[in-house]
Image (cartoon, rainbow, N blue to C red; front, top):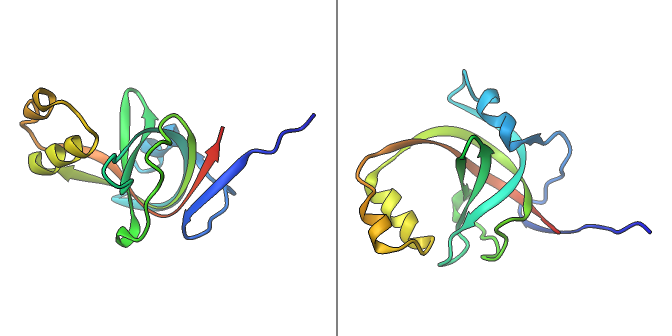
Length: 136
């Protein structure tokens, strides 16, 4: 018996065609400031306030911050652990202490963990035009 995997679309309707795995992205971006691409990966966290950002596992205990173009759409807050395909721009950016603390609050982290954020950090980021959530 064949089962059909349900999908939900957010933002621009995109396809999974030519998507690379999230673990391939750091190497793809190695010599570039940014790159337009499609990425498939596992969601590791979602903004619990509105669903206005998510994090995706890129391997080596690293996460990529995913925001949505022009704050134009949100994703469900309960998709942690599910596979997504995102299309848009991948880039490396420096995140201030203030922004890191704000994101930690949105993620529902405990106050003591938030207070331990004291240095800016460089991270892999993604501005998504569209998202496919594969319902497992």
